[in-house]
Length: 222
Image 1: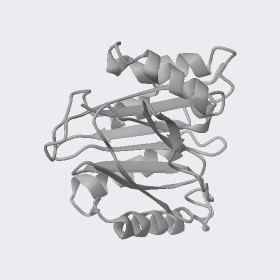
Image 2: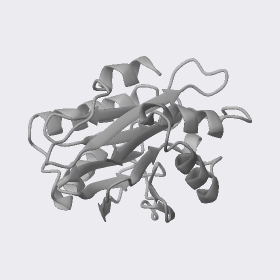
Image 3: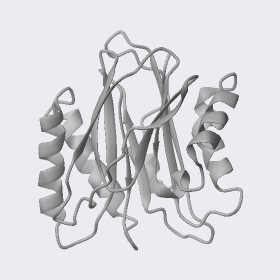
Image 4: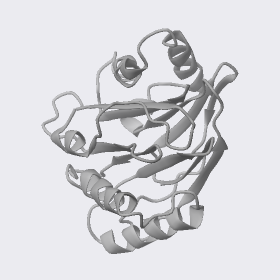
C-alpha cells in the first residue's frame, strides 16, 4: 500500500452507522517496476460507511491522494450531505473546475445510508454489486476525469441487502477480471476473512503481471 493510501485509510473495524452492519476494507499495490502509486483510497466510519477510490492520470502520484483529502475534509466537516446525489454532483463539479488544466483523477465514491448505496463517479474506476445472483456493474457510463474541465458526475443509487458485497476498483484491478471471474472469486472467498478480499482480488488480477497500479475497496452488509 502506498504512503498516500496509508495516510487516508481509517482503521479496519466494522461499522453500524445507521443500524446497518457493514464491513469495509481496502488494499492497493504498485504496478510492476513502479516507484509510486497513482491510486489512493479512503474509508470513513464514524457515523456511516463512506468509501472512495481515485486513480490519478499519467505521472500523477499525488493527484489521487489530493482529491481524497479534499473529499475527506468535506465529509468530516459535515459539508457534503451524502444522502443526496446533488451534493455529490456539486462537489465533483467544483473539484473538476478547480483542478482544470492540471492533473486529472478518476473518482468513485459511495456511502451506505439506511440500507442503500448512495454516491457518484467520474472516469473509469468502477463499482460492482456482487451476491449469489451474480455480479453487476454499477458504473456503466464512464465520463471524463476530475480535472478535465468536462467531468460529468453519474449517480450510484442502489439497495444493499444482507450478504451483498460492493467493490470499488481502479482500472488496473478490474481490467483483468471479467464479471464471471470476479463473481466466482468473491463467492469462493465467502468463508475466508473478509478483510483479505481486496488483496485476494489484487493477487488474482495481477497473476499475469501488474501493468498498472491496483486498488480494491470491498464492503459487505452483514
